[in-house]
Image 1 (tube, one colour):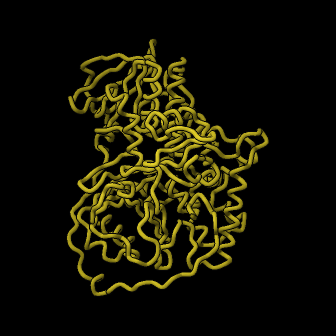
Image 2 (cartoon, one colour):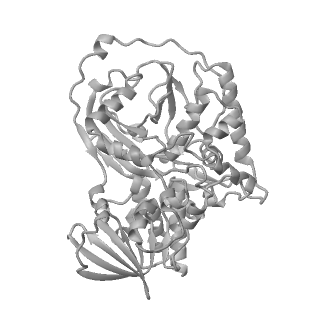
Image 3 (tube, rainbow, N blue to C red):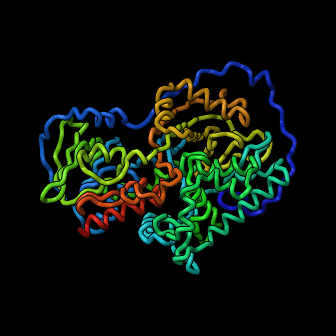
Length: 533
């Protein structure tokens, strides 16, 4: 199977005939679609700008305090619990999970953000231990992990709508000219070369966690280039290839070819080396609710140490450690929490406000976060229009700036229903992330509804007549963008440095790559440091 991470079998296929849909039906006026814009409690977070909180009404104490309940914060909490440490985790939202949030309706659970985990590399023993704890890895055969079949993505996995036809796999193939196929093959060979390459220091050129990658200066020079410039340097100009590589950059980074470091762009293809006894290397782990399933496994054992609806607004160093001020939203009063150490699993634009007057010798403006729009659509449509590959887990539209949609009920083997939920992903690309973010917030539900239906009209011209619900979630700061010069620049390195061995940093923006494995790694890394000082 051809997938985004495996270029096996690049031979082109014949473009079959397409079916013409009745234009009269397609032009009928669409019925009203219930729905709206949902999302995080951004209004509470924006109160950090005004600091309109009263004096603390109580003081509590703990050994370590974690601020932020995304993957990195939950990973830190897991590690502290395993060590028997006393800790508290403070989270602004009603629930933990960060950008692995999920939802549920009468049809299915579904993701609001991150929705899969590729087979993990074996060089993070804490991650492998966690996956064994929650029975994702059930054992080993011939030295390779055996994954729980329920968690491996069921077939059919991926399809691409190209030239009015659904082809298998996401790499453009149907109707692609010979010269373009040759460029796709050449790019594949180049990425395979980097995948197996080692630097002059003997380390893997690209791996996960990224900080374990080679520090060979010749390899690090790639970070100064854009992925766009890298392709042009290698004479790779095929529009099919460029669309595909941009799709991949948008998938993991929320950025375009021009706004993605070449080192990060290559990392997408060359860093994952996971293997399994019972699955091919390109298989992914997924659930109806996406990575929300993983965050729940992290959250459940530490639930009694989590305070949600807690808006942290100030952190200061004290003689005994740190003092954290936070607003208890549910009780509408402020609390002082004293701890020996703090772990900030929050992005740098938040840390800047939490640490007033603290010099960290880094430029906060160097950290840019990609905005996203995610929508969940409940429909009675089969989404199999009989022109090519049947409905898959991942369904992508060639030439679109979106990532297409995921079929949330793919893993529900016991579900026999005429209804389904599809999760539609659109990274909001643009060099000026602040301007793109503000523009997204200014647009109402009607705009996003029409935008989504317009994107899906080609493969599904009658979808609007089968929709029962459409909800939209706007991620203003969905993930860190690894722009040219950022991954191996001074600002990211300095963002990892603790303050007086009392305040430690764990957010995935300290990795420069916002993926589950990096957030998990930096969470337990920060927790180890917090306990050792």
